[in-house]
Length: 99
Image 1: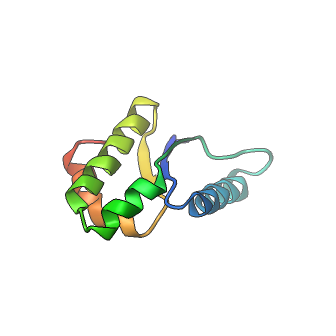
Image 2 (image 1 turned 135 degrees about the vertical axis):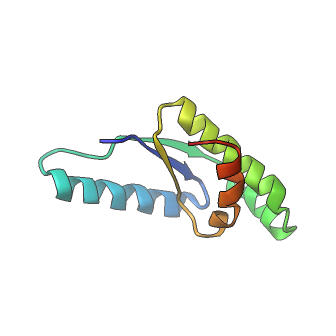
């Protein structure tokens, strides 16, 4: 089982829902007391929202790439963005070589 890296905090409520869904799916697949192996990096949504409001997508891409590098350093083998909007900066994460 691979270790999933979660970039969360946008909002913490959606991060909790992603975590819940991933672990329910893992339990359904593997049964018993199994859960997904995961690592979570949480960003401060107030900072992210301020950058979104000013449409500073390069800065947002840098933030998400940095979070992905943190996950990689912690042992994550793949990354999940626990929000919809930040998928707009996927290319920046990929270009940074993070996971």
